[in-house]
Every structure is written in structure tokens, then in C-alpha cells.
Image (cartoon, rainbow, N blue to C red; front, side, top):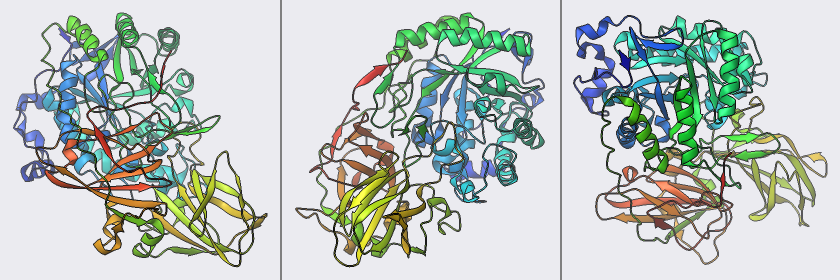
Length: 633
């Protein structure tokens, strides 16, 4: 017997996620809802020669990646039904530690971070699950999914057995695995395999680390098949005894090289491409990356013809909502755009692409049974343009914020005494001090610092511009530096990813002292401090940076749309308290995806934080806009 699709085992009582009854069922043992014979599963996913086996049947993994934290919860089911309709049988997802434990010992698995609900929804849809819990996940997310409060320790060595790191991992896994263990196949759940860390061979700082993470999983009750995942640069160092190695790639040339290596290292074992990259992510100031659909079909077909299982990374990329995007820093620092469209099989908004239809036809031809019909597309609309009516300059907003931190020297974001001692993870930090002379200002700014004399912007400090001239001033003058964390590096050297002012800032080679430091994390509670009386009508010549407030009326049922910010330069958009992410006129991303699920029928609050120059209107489109594209080889 050959398993190509999910056995229809999950037709137990459906409780709507978010309902009271569902939450009660989560606290109780939901396995009691499943037929007794189902709980007698024995073998789980295992290997036999060159094949995967599920119980005593040959099993092919046809997987696709969707990250629950990048997709509005209301759309999870839509995306998973589309995955099923494409002929796939397995969902893979990362688990982002930094979002689930935003403060040390404080966990969040609610709303859009409800991992258990996502996994159970996959089961209900008829999909198996491969879980990739990290602790490091890469994933083009800030610090590769590691919480920034780890960097409060000046001696921190991430992804090693360093005491401060591994103890934090243990406490996180204590909590996470208590949720994951009941969802495993052998406990009646859909999770058939679990990945140990992620692409560690490319990092390879501590030979004791991977065995330690494996034990951390097993000691907490993980009993399913364990996997590693590495690209061509890390495969040689990433193999772990007793754990099945899988590979990440985009080219057929890499497939031949890596499978030959694996055969030599681990003998005859099932082959799996854990990440076949269906596209690629974009960076601010770069092109939009595209991979031709015919090339994708050709490679997927060749991978399966070679006897390998496959996971499409990404099947659906979604969006880096808020400030969660990561960055690269090899020759130069490049932060990732808000959209995680990835040129994937589904678009950022969940629409079909040529890749979807070609892959659906291909998987349908080998599935052995008809595929379910593709769900209808979610409708889109272009709302009427709106003109922000109210305005609040950053300088006037400071009076409504929490008291600043006073410090003789600058303090980096992560070490600020805010958020119950956990520092600041995301957003902006404002540093203020007084100077009494002109000259050359210099220092290390991470990542981008706009420099002001009083309220007048005189330029930026960043990775390339490390000095700026302070013009002639009279008497004591306020010097301000507004620093943005544009995204911590998620792949490569991640130990040095502290943000803000790093060390002293110098004027004419003399360190400046006596700073007031404001944490501008721009969370919901941040905006709740602005009373209605704080806002005024937008003046003819606004002082920047500034917040702009407008109202988006929605007469009928809300629909997905895309916000265009023509004439605006750089900033962040918030809709009804939800952070849509960053915009920047250097492209390639030219619109922000606004899910209809986050809009209300009636009046919707729109706040835009603009750093430099606002446009006259906020426009909307029923389709995204991207800048110049480049085809991937």
C-alpha cells in the first residue's frame, strides 16, 4: 500500500478555534475525541532502506511550508485547503521563539500565535505536519527567531551550549513541548516528524550543541522521526548520528551533489529535500526576485523522479507583519522587506499563481485519486483614497510616553530597563543629549539613525555613513538621534545583533554623556497613551517625524486590499492597532497587504508613522505593486 495523501483520520468533533468550547478542549485531553483504535498507532513515520514508511506502508512526503505567524488566523483554513488542492499531503512550519516568549518566562500562544490550533486545523484539513521548532529557525525573521533579550548578556554565545543560552532553551522547550507532545502521531495527532534545530552545519560553533538539542527534544517526550536540514554549505558539518539528514536547495546540480554526499555518509536512507526554494525573499533597495514556474515544475519533477520526497519552501509565504523581518549582512547590511511573498506557489494574499496550477497538475497525475477542487479566491477591492486629518509630531508625542531612561552613556535597545527588565526588541529608540559646539559626530549606529539638531534633521548615520557634520550652533542645543532596528540578521553571525547606539557616540572625538532615552516600540499600548486631545489638524508644513491619523470607512463586508503610499518616504502603518509593517520608497515593495480580516465594517483607524516626508493621500489597490524584478538562476 502506498500513502500519497493523508488518511482521513481527523473527522472528530470540530470546535471553532477561538470559541470557549475550543479553549476548554485544549486544556482537556482532546485525544479522547478520537476513535480508540486510532490511539493504537505504533510505528509512526520511519525509514526502511530508501523509503519512508508510515506504519507498514510506503509513504512519500509531498510537503509545503506555511508559517502561521505570517498569515492572519482567519485565513489559515483557506491557505491549508489550497495546499490540499495542490496535491500536497504534509504541512511544515517553523515555531518562532521570539514571538512566543517576548519576555523571559512570559509565553504567548494566543490568537495568531496559537500553534496548537494551527496544527489541529492541518489535521482537520487532511494534512500531516512536520514541525520545525528550532530554537533557531532562520526563516528571514528577526535574529532567526531567537528572542532579543538573550543579548542582554554581553558574553552570550547563541546556538551553543553556553550556559545562559542552553538554560533559556530548556525553559522554553519545557513550555513548548508540553503543547507539542500531545499533537504527535503516536499520541493520535498529525505531527509525523520533528526537525532538530535548523541548518546548523552552516554555523557549526559547538560540536556538543546539536546532540544537546536532540536530547532536549527527546527528554521532553518527542518520539517521532527526527530530522536535520542543511544547505550545500553546511551539510558536511550538519549531519547528526541517528538523525535523518535532509537537504535544502534550488538547483538540480545541488541535488546530485548533496544526495551523493548523503549516500556516502548515512548509507541507503530515504532522500528528502526539506526546502526546495520556490522563489526567494526580497531586500529593501534590491530587485523583486522571481523564479520561473516552468523551472519550478522541472525541478520538482526531477527531485521526485530521483526518488526524493520534497517540501516546497514556501508554498505560501505571507507577510512580515509588524517589525519581525530579518536581515542579511555579508558584504553589506540588507534588511528584508515587509512582504514575504517569496514568489511562492500562492501569493502574499493567498492567490493562485502559474506555479500552483502546474504543480497541481503534476501532483494530481501521481496522486492516484482526484484532488479536491481549488477553493474560490478571496475577493479584493480598492477602497477610496483617504487624506489623514490629524497629526502629532514625534516631539510633541514624547510627553505622553513613559518616562525616559536617564543614563550617562548610551544604552543599546536590548539593555534598556523597559518591558519588565527584558529590554526593547523592535521598533525605534530615541536618544537625546545636549551639545554646545559644532563638529564631527561619529559612532556605531544599528541600524539607521536620523540625526536632529533640536527638531531639524541633518542626515543619517548607518553602516556606510559613520560620521556626520554638526553645523554651527549657538549655546546649548538638543542633539537627537532616532535609531531604527531595521531587522536583526537571521543567517550568519548573529551574536553581534544588538541595536541602537552601540557604545559611545562622539563629537569631535569626545564621548557625549547624559542621555535621555525613549523606547518607541510602537505596540498597542504605545498608541493608547495618545489621548484624543493630543492630535491636531495636519498643518501645511508638518514637522517630522510625525504620526498621521485617518479613518478608512468600510460600508460592506471588509475585503482584502493593498495600501499604496505614493509620495510618502519611509515609515510604518497601523490599522486598528495592527502593525502592517514598514514601507520605504526605495522599493522593491510598493504596496502593503491589508487583510480584510483586520478591517471592521464601519470606521477603521489608520495611523502612519512617517520619518521624513508625507504624501497627500493614502491610496488603495486591489492588486500589489512591485518594482523591477530579477529572475533567479
